[in-house]
Length: 95
View 1 (spheres, rainbow, N blue to C red):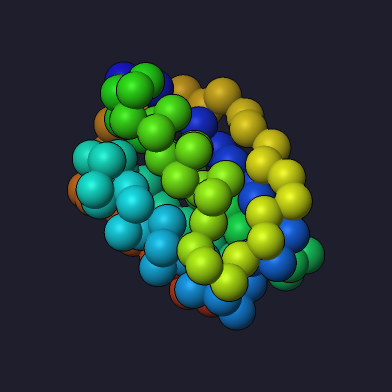
View 2 (cartoon, rainbow, N blue to C red):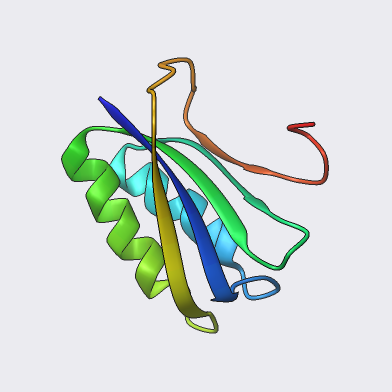
């Protein structure tokens, strides 16, 4: 089990990117969350097998139809093992 935090920059807000990420993560069997950030990027915390997380990263690079992903920054995280599925975070849910 591995965990990665992705910060996705480009035209990624207002184009269905979070729902796209949620669907892709579910298809890959990856747990975690996705949220918009105030700086216009999208943040993803993904936890799963190395193969599943890498496949999700490729999905995130492609993005949904109307997105234009300019860059993905990846950070290694310690797996928490506490996520139940993958979900979209709206507003200030994380605090």
